[in-house]
Structure formats: C-alpha cells, structure tokens
Length: 301
Ligand SMILES: NC(=O)c1ccc[n+]([C@@H]2O[C@H](COP(=O)([O-])OP(=O)(O)OC[C@H]3O[C@@H](n4cnc5c(N)ncnc54)[C@H](OP(=O)(O)O)[C@@H]3O)[C@@H](O)[C@H]2O)c1
Image 1 (cartoon, rainbow, N blue to C red):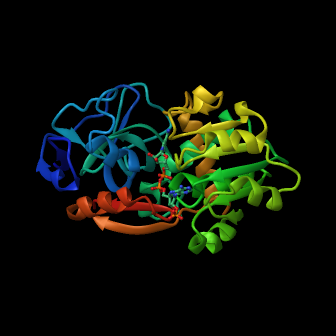
Image 2: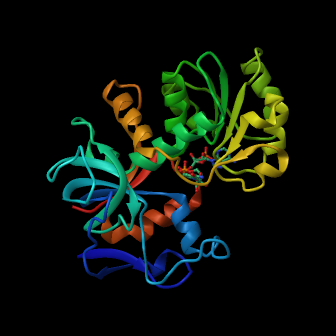
C-alpha cells in the first residue's frame, strides 16, 4: 500500500510516499481503508525532533494519528462494529491507504469524510480537558487557543454542556469564535483585565490549548491552580496546574459523545483546507505556522 513515512528528524521535505506492507488489525483494533486523515501539530514537532529526548522515533516512521474510513478488518475481541462500517478514530500511521485504529466511533451519516478524518483528536482532547478540569454546567470557562482544532471543539462542547465560554484568538478570528458560541478576546498582554470585563462573575476553569507560557496568569484569573489545565505546557504541574499529554482511559466514550453532538448539530468542525496525500508536506508546513482555523485534513481516497 501507499503510506507516508520519514527517515530522519528534519523539515516537511523528508516526508515521502512509499510502498510498504499493509498493517493488520490486532486484538481490540480495527483496520480501515482510509478516506481522510487529520493533521495535528504534534506531528511536525515529533518530525522536527522536538520530542526526541523523551519520545524517540523509530525510523522509518509513519505519519498521522487519526483518520476516517471504511472498516475492512475487525480484530479479535472487538464487538459493535463490522466490515463495511464507516468510522472515525485514532491510531498510528493514518496517512496511508490502510491504517489500524485503536479506538473509534461510528461516523454520523451526514458527516463528510474529510471532517471525520480530523474529528477524533480535537473532540477527544477537548472532552478530556474539560473533564479533567472539572468544568460543569453553569460555570465560566476561559479557553486559550480557541480557534484551533482542539479549541474549536472545546468551545462548542462546553457550550453544549451549559457553560459560558470566553475564547482567545487573534482579532480576525473573533467572528469565527462568536459563531462557535464564545465571547472572544485577543491573547495580547492584559488578558486578566479583558477577561474581567467579559466575565464580571469570575472564571471557574481555564484551559491552555496554545502553550503560550501563561499558566501563572491563568491561575491568577481562576484563583485556583487545580482548575487550570494545559495540553501543551509541560511546566503546568510546577505551578500546581494540570497537564494532560495523552487520551483518557475511555476515549471511545468521548468519541461517541462527540459524534452524538455532531448529529444534534451542536458540534461542527471547520476544515480550513484539505490536501491530497501527495501534498502532505505542504499540509504539515502550514500546521507548523500555528494559525490554523479549525482543522487541516489530508484526503487519501
Ligand atoms: N496533550 C494532548 O493530548 C494534545 C492533543 C492535541 C493537541 N495537543 C497540542 O495542543 C495544541 C493545540 O492543538 P490544535 O490541534 O488545536 O492546534 P492548531 O489547530 O494548530 O491551533 C492553531 C490555533 O492556535 C492559535 N494560537 C496560536 N498562538 C496562540 C496564542 N498565543 N494564544 C491563543 N491562541 C493561539 C491560532 O490562533 P491565531 O491564528 O488567532 O493566532 C490558531 O487558530 C498543539 O500544540 C498540539 O500539539 C495536545
């Protein structure tokens, strides 16, 4: 099959389409014929070698953590899904004609495959972040980095769960944030004062989805370090805040909730741009610039 691989730590130019053996579904997994695969910032960081000291890559390495497609193999012990079902989910090496998923959910019938390809990481991470921070209905949540993939999902899920949401993004994206249901503000210095104007009642929970080094300020804004959570800033625990690096124990549950919210019209995912597999290097380069609105997706078939 065709798959994208890289053989050394460097820029996106090292991504190559190669012919390799197809993977097969092991116990607890499914294999899909991939239609679309999401692009995530962790991929360019891993490829550039930023994580090599604690997460070394075995070369040659595949690319892609999530995707959507048609199930064509069901691993031992898997129930509730059959060959021919359309699913989205997470695995490894999803930028390929076939990929193995470790967890998944049924794709809503009205969800296009390009949206489904980028739906798993954003929605699971958003739900995990809100849950770990203990965000509840009636509370006010500050979401820093609200216009990216995870942020866009987090804003809408928090709104669907009955929270008031303040989101940060550059000014040009404030209409986008309003459409998602957030009260927008910029991420320039002086965030605490602007947030106070938008939420005189105070902020209960703050999520750092951008990693801009603002954990102490977020603790000041909430007044409670335990209700500040980052998905990017490894130093968060040094300040008493939480850091969550990986999916939770029941990611399928999060994906099922996200699929349900999509079907109810409460959770949408804007795909900023789709790229054919042959242009995967361009997709990763754009992701690395750090200003994607919603999600970038690579289409495979
Ligand atoms: N720990 C985990 O489980 C986990 C899971 C998924 C992702 N992540 C990490 O979480 C981060 C977000 O992921 P993503 O997929 O949402 O990324 P993304 O889609 O690439 O995020 C891009 C967005 O970040 C915004 N942004 C850039 N600098 C900002 C700042 N200083 N303050 C606020 N917003 C800013 C941009 O808005 P503007 O264009 O307006 O600047 C843009 O809309 C990445 O670093 C990723 O690696 C972690």
